[in-house]
Length: 274
Length: 170
Image 1 (cartoon, chains in turn brown, purple):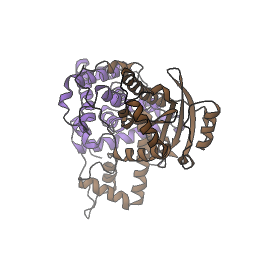
Image 2 (spheres, rainbow over the protein chains, first blue to last red):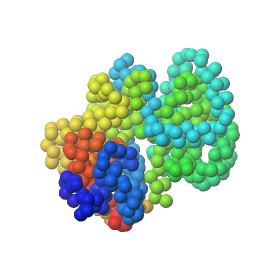
Image 3 (tube, one colour):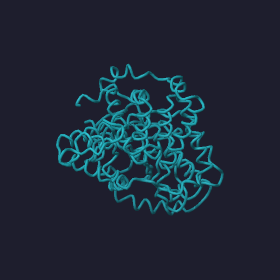
Image 4 (spheres, each protein chain N blue to C red):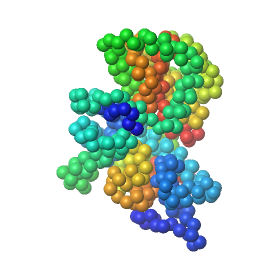
């Protein structure tokens, strides 16, 4: 294969399979270059040529595996604090921006809505009234939630096993309840449809945190962290509407009765191998 | 996407520091150098964030900045010597055997395999896997033609798969 991609044409004018492979190898998704005719042709070939299509599918699975493994590399402790301390005073403290890939966010909200159920709306408004009081404690809780998000993403990355494993989320939930770990008051119906993986009881600032791990319908692994709600009792309302990206994982937090949930999304690469 | 103001500095850090560090680690092969490069990258961002006109370009801006800092470091230390002296990890020779089973694959092994590749393959691959950058973005960051990026990604992935024992179906 040459350093510069050739025009890759077969006799008769079509793209050859080797060139199509080279182009497909460079794509992070089908939508990388909708205006690139070479890419469009390679994608068309992958759809019409079963062997090429199977090859690309395998490539994508393996790419997801490799990317996921590389992202498992732990970041040195204390680096985040050192980096955060570089913040220029007053110059970059504008309103928060929710940066999110649309597809993931839509799937996210669908799952979050299912998980929380209709009760969330009522709880949200009840919470809204409470959070309008305004005090330094409010800001403190927002800061604590931010720290909680970062800490849970770090714990997720360094997780080395579960305390209890099951594909049945109801069984996982029952195990957590039996061990007096924080869980939501109601078991959402969606638990029947999702595939559980396992759970673990963690600690954050002296409080128990339940980690429930499950796969969504696309086979992606999501992590649901649950902690006592009193930890963030005076959280500003705006914090509930934010999807924050932490170490390139999208996180969403919301209250549920006497607990607080934090959902961390992300594609599980090992799931793709199954 | 910009929605009403600049992202807070802390949010930018939290969003990107992990994969910027891993990108720096893949380039430098030295955890301390990787931490320093990541820190230098955010120091520059703190001073020059006004240059980032479009939030959609923020990730590319950060990876480009870190990459340029790495190149500056190499120039200071002389490229070949820096590469050799900073090889804290095992070279690729033993990886094919140890990674022969998928069960043994882990992040450390994958990073070692990536680090053992020639820089012309390693750099675009690291941006592909750790930054989710498109080939166009990779071409801009590395300042090489898009066709070259495609070719290097394709060949580099083949090399990486060999080292990781993922090419049994080929």
